Image (cartoon, rainbow, N blue to C red; front, side, top):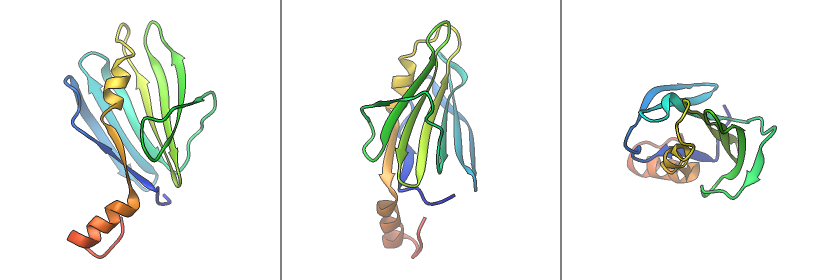
Length: 135
């Protein structure tokens, strides 16, 4: 994977949400989250070098460092949507697949824990405090 200019980070999860799986390999990163309201695997966070924005629309970004695009596939009876953030060298996206009856507002709650840190800042801190190498 080429180096993405931004590194995704998660803050404290909202009540009722938990991380159920993390997969990191040469192809990218996938983090799966469960919710007591939205269901198991209700939200999946993906990081890849590129992504397919077909069917999505540009939206005002809520993350510094990334351009946002949204695709809503279904609102009822269950919420299914994808929220993309594009930046040099990478694409980060949430896939929401909520169980029937779960409120789409859960996507806002979990989305608020995500933030981006410029890779250059992380590398500078690593060199300053730990090792003389880049992430």
